[in-house]
Amino acid sequence: MVVKGKSGVIKLNSKIMKKIVVAVLFMSLLISCKSGTADNKAPEMANEMCDCFSGFQKDMSPDAIALLKAVAESDSPRKTMQEGLTKMKPEDAMPIIEKFKQVGDRSSSVNKCMQAFDDKHAKETTADKNALLKKLRNVMKSKTDCQAGAAIINIGLEQQGVK
Image (cartoon, rainbow, N blue to C red; front, side, top):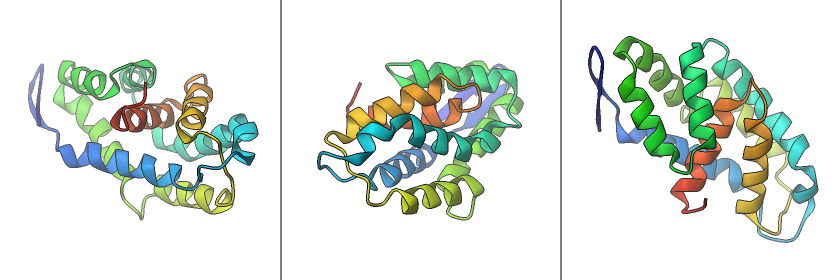
């Protein structure tokens, strides 16, 4: 996909979105579909996930944070992300795109943190994986330092056909 900004054209590879979805699905696979232990730990688990993303969004501009917040709250998060990037100057959009590439990079700090999260909670179970992901997203989007994590979960839920 090509995103045209105010000052030119930015090529936004659909592989980035696929990497984001893969990362969300990867972290959601830790939770098997049995009634279970994770359902009562959503706030605690969301806080741990936020710790993974606080450094991730630390250097982002206020406009980037506002876009992530809009994506986290949107019923069409991929469209919101694409439209938001289109409205930005390329020099403002590129850092966001580069950050999101890190989510799928196994050597990145955010990916390593999520792997540690998965390892820690590998035995957790839930009655409804999507309902749990919604709870996690809702806790995460209420925090100022966790909009990136909430946005990524929201994109993943949309990709799975869940509103």
